[in-house]
Length: 147
Length: 315
Image (cartoon, rainbow over all chains, first blue to last red; front, top):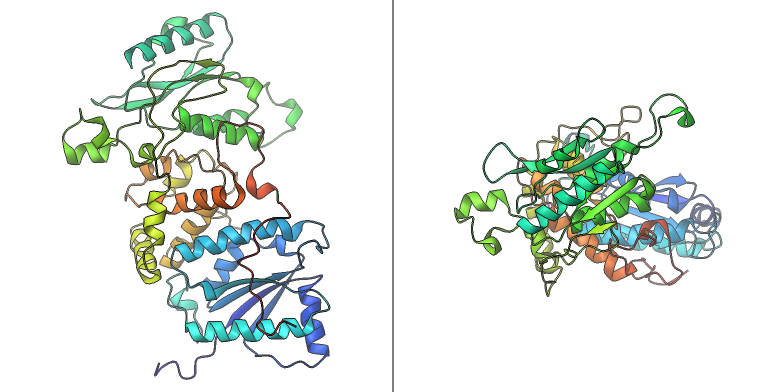
């Protein structure tokens, strides 16, 4: 791991506007400490996330992707996260099947009141991706990797 | 097989004589020996004798439903109500074709009332590539397409005219390919996937041949918000991952993508995985049931949460 001693994981987090993003906000306002490796992208709903966005994040140099939405039953749009849940189950199974490490693609539910849970989740995801190491899958575009 | 072909010709000529169809889509003799090719007959300008053109043999592997959606696609310009009335299509279907047709009906791309389906019993289609290797074209079981070996829908149901005959037996292990691949190590799977995809020349033939890929503008072709380039390995991998993912709960396992591929990329190993997951997780199979709801258009409160990450010391 010589060349990687300075390596820090880059993680893209897609958070839904109504729960997880507010949860991240609460974690920040409450001054809960968590790793700085996360790049947050706010989306209207976890159901808004196209699998293409996740692969695009990997292509552009992300070492891990986290998707988080409201707990099942709490969706602002009634059923967005329930439809997303089916999609994500298949997507995660499929990407792992084609050889992606399961640690790199994670899904979770975080509500607006769970600042503590959000910080704990971030620490867990960062630790997982750090343990897995830099992305070696060829989905990552070599010329776009600004390391 | 000759009896089936004769019955099919009689049915087709009856349909033409009664003026119940505008087009008949079936197979005709190809220019080379041991080939059949799709033919689209405009019967408004021809007599019932054109039905003699139709053939049915073990080389009719093409999925004919791929032509169907274009007959019913809404006009690119002008108002929908000004468009010509929809045509009536007579379609020759085997098991996988019918599954594709029903998929198009479920997704409201094709009106069922404008179709007259002639269902044929299928004993499996021959694989030209295997025949070239084996040089033993009489042995059907040896040269049959891999997808036919896993087929459990060779006996069509719910068509307008059904011709009965010998069909394939339902195989024991339907997802053997997937199970074998799942048992390999992660690095091994990745190496295999990358090796297969590295041969891809991005001709998009897999997409064009697929009856389920009917989007006017494919994500791979979008220019305004250009998601995907075409040059690099990364783009190609993403193209294939997303194209295969779009088949979740829709693939009819006709193997048209594999037959169309000039590089013989093993696409079925990956498409089958999604079919297996959809069946195991959501209990959905693209079968002959017209009323079922596509699995990704719906949800259930009891869907699995097992893939969700829970932080260790829960907040």
